Structures are given as structure tokens and as C-alpha cells.
Length: 293
Length: 314
Image (cartoon, rainbow over all chains, first blue to last red):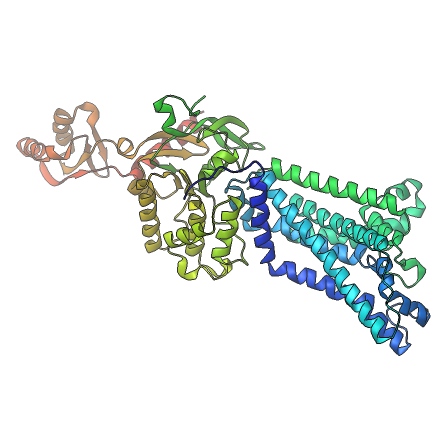
């Protein structure tokens, strides 16, 4: 047993390896990712394809003409519909993941044990953040691959021409998805760190993202100043990003909940980036300073 | 400053030193002006009742909790400095691990955090006799096994200083004996052990020096032998006034106390025959006479009750 001299960034790399191991072996992570991928496939493709083939209305698609429904299921529609389920549903799942990953270690005492191994607080927390970033990237990539496979399958089954989406649109959609899911993951990490309790963090986070933001947007018309606030809330930014990429809004009758057109694509991207930075810095600052009971 | 690297020989032998270390939570002072010193290679017992401030002090030494005032130097560094923490192994207030991971995977995660090799995991698992259950999930472990895994994680990386907070908590008698044996063995191999406990017999059995803490204050720091003091002789005989008079001739006026229905004399055990002769020749009826050693427990209760009395008077 010897102590080797480490490079300055070695504690961070060691922490990434440690966090990657424990998150990879955590069934909760796989369950959450699995639920998202299944739900995305089901709501974006399976239900709509059933609605198209049976000619019946299904899942809010009652008034949509068949051809429009089929167009959404083709590979070239992926950039448009890719982020539709992310602002609310995918985001909520990733927020749960972030809150569990950051908050559980307090109750279990695992943060305490990890920090007494000597990586330094910021390096240890950086390890968690980097691993979660890797998971977000993997989830976006897996979602894209599944969407591509499903749409290609439907195009083949319906003898439609295989038209691939332009690379620039795909890049924008992937970037938008990374920002939406990344922002919600970071929000989960912050709230998990602040509450030190995964249960409280998940509960509060879901109430915020699913209920409070929507209620605030509902009453924002009553007060001018409130509208300024609701226009820059995390959910608004995420919904507007999906809307700017072409996802249909709920207000249009057949879109996904949470998709909005309040902000433009550029504004949404900036705001989402700002939220990621603020959430990460606030969480890391808390982690660095606080007493670990 | 104390203990800085490259200081003179005496200072480098001191590997933990605190200077008026204090932690306040609101109005409550959990740790009050604690000055303790741990020397290289010793087993230091940090002794005190539950809630005395032991765990909070250890947390401050590990950098998990920031002191409200005062300072500490651990292995020549500020507490919590990665350089010091890397050379310290710790088990603080119960083992904290990921319940869904196996014991082995938990240690692999911790080994990765310190950049240690996976092979070390098997060595420390063997050390605490957990190799047989290493593949089982941590949540299925008994309290004793969890505690042993905590010690195994503290041993990762071959630390110079081991900080063990109540390491025998939750262990059955055989487990406690095994844990003590392990600690003594670790000390023999050159690890310095800072161990907290509320079990006086445990500290008496394995520690070289002790610090006694009560209500956040360090009452005394000394070797176990010094604390227990010289041996005494217990006499139960009649009439008592004659026993006292004879005793004072041999042990001095200050060396005689009435207690437990008898008389305690500050005399070495080998003077018992001399004392017996003196008592008999002065016409005393002797019922019982035996050397008695004060246990750490006696000293501890004497000390904590004295400190409580002083506080009440203030």
C-alpha cells in the first residue's frame, strides 16, 4: 500500500471513476432512464402509429389528419418532435435522477465516507456532475437512436420514402435536448444538495416543475410583473426550446404538455445555459462550505 | 505553528494537535476550547459519555465540520486538506455506504475516490474478515459487518492516522474483542490510532493515552497509568478510628480515606503484610484487607462529577 503522487486533476478523474461506478450499478438510474425511453417511444411513436393505422383518434390526436400524423412519424420529422416530451416529462425524470444522485449520499452517510477518502469536496462533487453530464449525453443519444429506429421502421412498414433530416437540424435538436435535460438534472442536483434528502427534493422539485410553474403561467395574465417572471422560469425556457425546435404546443390542441412558444430558440438556449451554470455553481458552493453531519 | 513539516524532532512526533478548538451550534457549545495532542504511533483514547462532543471534535479534525473558533493541525496540514485526509483513514459515527452496492463495490468506489488500486480492496476485506460476504449488498449486512466494512474503508490506502469513532458500537462481545485485537495490531504495525469511545474498559485495555471529554470540555489528557494513579489498599476493620490512626502513620495524613464501608490507604500492594502487622498489634479486628487498583471508570466518574460540581457552583 503506497501513496502515489497524483497529477493536479487526478482527484477529479478519480472521483469521476468512483461516481461512474456507483451510478452505473444503481438500479434506480436504469429504472429512470428506462421509463423515459419507454415513455418517449410510446407517446411519440407507438400511440400515434396506432392512431394512424386504425384511423381512430388517440391520445389527443383526434382532429389531426392521417397524413399529418404519418409525417410526424417519419425520420425527417425527428428534429421537430425529438424534444416534445422533454420539457415536462423527460425533464421531471432527469430532475429525479439529479436529486437522488446528489441527495441520497447524505442520508446514507456515503458523502461523509467518500470525502474522508481525500478527493477534496469540489473534486468529489465535480465527479458527480461530470458523471451526470455523461448520463444526460447518453440519454439524449439513446433517445435519438430509438426515435431513428422507430421512424425508419414505420417508414419501411408504410412504404414511405426514407428521407433523413438535415444534419444541422439534428444538431440543433440534440443541442436543445442536452440543454433541456441538462438544466433539469442540474436543478435536481441543486435541490437534492440543499435539502440533503432525496424524498423531499424529488417531491418539491416535481411540485415545482409540474404544478407551480403551470399555475403561475396560468395567472400571469392577471399581473404584468408576474408575466415577466414566468417568462424566464426554468420550465418556460425548457418548453420554449422544444417549441422553437418545432414541437407542437399543447395550446395547439395536439401537442405535448410543457411545450411553449414564449421565447425564441436563441433566448431559450441562453437562459437554459444560464440556469445550468447557476444551479451547478450554487450546488457546488453549498457542497464546499457546509458542515457534513 | 505546531507540527509543521520539517520542525524539530519532538514536533514531528505530534501528528494531531488542536488549539482551543471550539464548535458552536447556535447557543449550544458542542466543543469548548479543546486542546488535544496525539503522538505518532500511539493509540489515543478519546473518552466521554454520549453527547460529550467526541464525534464533533473528530469531524472537525477530518474537515467535515468547520470549527467556530480555534485551530487544528493534522499530519502537518489544515484539517480537511486533501493532503492530510489522504493520509488519514476514518470511520465517523457509523459506517456510511451505498446500500444497493455490495461490500466489495462500496470499497471499490471508495478506493477510486482516493486513486487507490482495486487490489487493495481485497486486502482490506480480508483484514476485517469480510471476504466471504463481500459480494452481498451492503443493506443485507448486520450492524457488526457494516462496522467492519467501515474499518476496511478506513484502512484503504494504508493511512498513517486512523480516526475511529466508537468502532465497537453495535458489535457483539466476540466482535468487540476482535475489533480491539485489530486496533492493537494496527498500532503495532505503525498506524497511529485516534479512537473515541464511551466504554471505559475498552479504552483502559487498548489505549496508551486518553483524553477525557465531558460536556464539550477536555478535562484531562494523560496516560492511562497516570490517570488511574498509584494503587491503594482497602481495609475493612474495627474500630475505625484506630484503623485511621494506624493507616495515617504508614500512608500519611492525606493518604487515608473512608469509603465503601472501609478505609482506602494510598499504599503499594507489597506493604500489605506490614500494614496487617501494624493493625493487629494496635488491637484492631481485621475483617478484610486487599490491594485495590482504581479503574478508569472510578477516575472518570470522579472527574466528571467534580467538573459538574464546579459548573454548578459557577
